[in-house]
Amino acid sequence: MNAPLYNTQILRLAAEIPFHERLTAPMASVEKRSPVCGSRVTVDIDMDDQGRVSAVGMLVRACALGQASASLMGAHVVGRTGAEIMAARDELTAWLAGERATPPDWPGMDIFLPALEHRGRHAAIRLAFEAAAEAAERARG
Image (cartoon, rainbow, N blue to C red):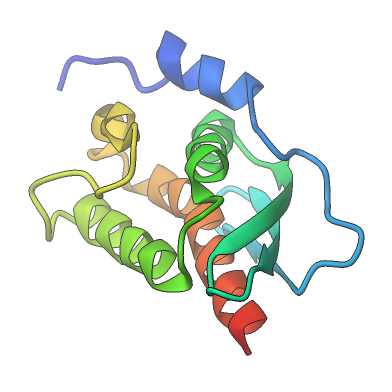
């Protein structure tokens, strides 16, 4: 692959993280940390009566790839069910591991194509989705 790992689109997403404030009393909150690089993402989730995300808050202390991933997750998580978030997490994990040919069914994930060959960066890319999936599961009870 000839594409740069940190391109303009990734850097723009990293600078535009939505819901970049914690919720005051979330139904569930999960922090995930990458042991490889020390990136850390905390996701707060509230769910509605239909089991869909109604509010999200995040604290993101991660590299540009982790920030960009948190940005994509946050931009499209409201209105999703826990099952949809877990499916996106699992598809992302499989794609990064080379077990899936296409990016996850989540808007914008193809921007991480240049990161596929950089295994040391995969954990940071997964953090927000792992935290959101676990928080959604906890919030559902």
